[in-house]
Structure formats: structure tokens, C-alpha cells
Image (cartoon, rainbow, N blue to C red; front, side, top):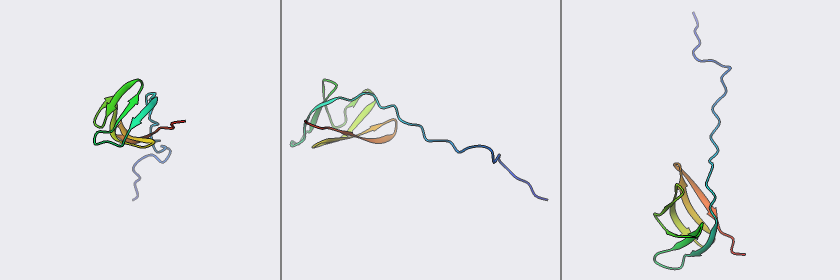
Length: 79
């Protein structure tokens, strides 16, 4: 006697694409004990949350953040 469980016609779930809010970085101060960035016209630091995005680390040219449980990287191009 053989039995099958599950339905082979079922497709695996595709990972959801994150809809990250618009983040316009206009400045970064990273060479201090308290790095800060200007995002969407607001000054934020490590630990700040803006539009549901938590700032984890501020570096030259990049901000590491977390949004809806996923780690993301926000690039800053100062040109």
C-alpha cells in the first residue's frame, strides 16, 4: 500500500519583494563617535527609525538598515 501526502501541483511560495519606502539621502557625517545622516530632510542617527526603516550603521557612502525584518543597504552617492 502506498500513500502520498501533499499536492505536487502546488508551486513553492515566492519570496515577497520588499516595498522599501523612498529614502533620499542628502548627507552623511560618519567620521564621529555619533554618525548621522540626512534622509528625506531629517537628521537621523544609529537606532533611529524613519518610515519603518531602522538605521543600524552609518558609513561613508552607505547606510545599513533593517526593514520588515530584512537587512538592507542604502547607497549614498555624493555627486
